[in-house]
Amino acid sequence: MNVSEHITHSAEETIALGRQLASTLKHARLVLLRGDLGAGKTTLVKGIAEGFEAAKQDDVTSPTFTLVHLYPGPEINVYHVDLYRIDTQRELDTLGLDELLAEPGNLVLVEWGEKFPRFEKERDVEIRIERGGEQERRIIVTGA
Image 1 (cartoon, one colour):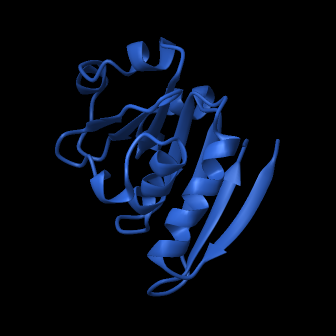
Image 2 (cartoon, rainbow, N blue to C red):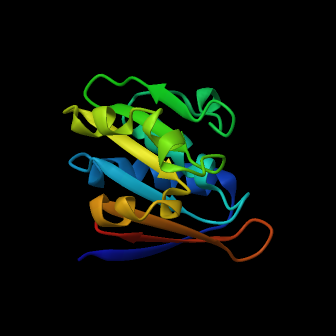
């Protein structure tokens, strides 16, 4: 399994890394994004969505309250999912993630997916973001 580690020193660098990672995620279906609140998960997604030409970074926002955001791209549709407020399997089922994962051409990026063990087994890639200070982030990519 491939593992790569990156250090970024600003939101701009984290977005740029997301753009770079897009090329390695072309064949992934499910990506788990791990990190504390405010670690930079959505910031990284801004770059990934740009890398797939699915959205401009300014159009990417956290799906904390809407739970799922779709950024349609010319080749890949990027779904950004936040499970922070989802606590039960029943709530999870209402999101229709199985349908999203079954559809070719969809990339599903899931924050807080570790709350549901099935995602640990099904994930293609895991991206862990750790704070190293106010701006510094250590980003570990496993599986890409």
